[in-house]
Length: 215
Image (cartoon, rainbow, N blue to C red; front, side, top):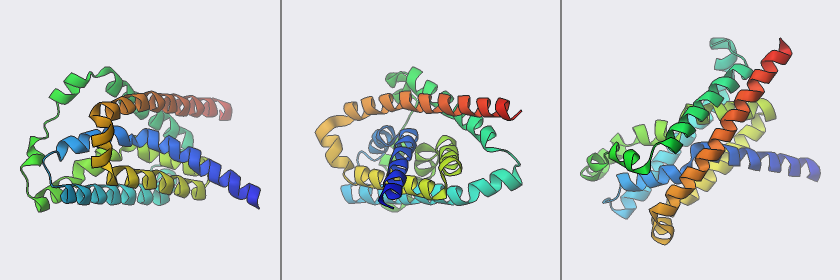
């Protein structure tokens, strides 16, 4: 029994690492910090909590309803989702890796968030900060692939692990920013893109291979 628990725990843990790589919390944290640079600390923490609650709700909803929609509404198979999700992750990682940090900053204007009241920024920032910045199509397809491959329990556990880590990270965002600085967070974000690319390649290869084997 302990061996089964241990194997399930390891499966959840490694699946959570995969999901965290796709969610890229370090990269999103740098953007969120820039968007809320002049905001009162208590308001910033409240906003981050709402973003995470919203993102968690989206992921959990998709975790439980995604397989039904995939099979009975859209009539697609798991391998089709693997290929689509793999392509999304590869394109997303390639775009983020090839886009220079200067060009990336020049295209993002965070000033609109810095002059809003607390209620306005809480209302207007859920979209796009929770979706699609934090949770996007790549993360949702990854959750479905994990749950279909390893079971709903593993999928549920990996989501819980991943968001528990992000709750801690975002709660201490100001302290982390002060200690390591935005540059280190940006470096972590760029490194994560390499793993996102690898996850996308793996999903694509497995999907194509399974389609040809079944054919």
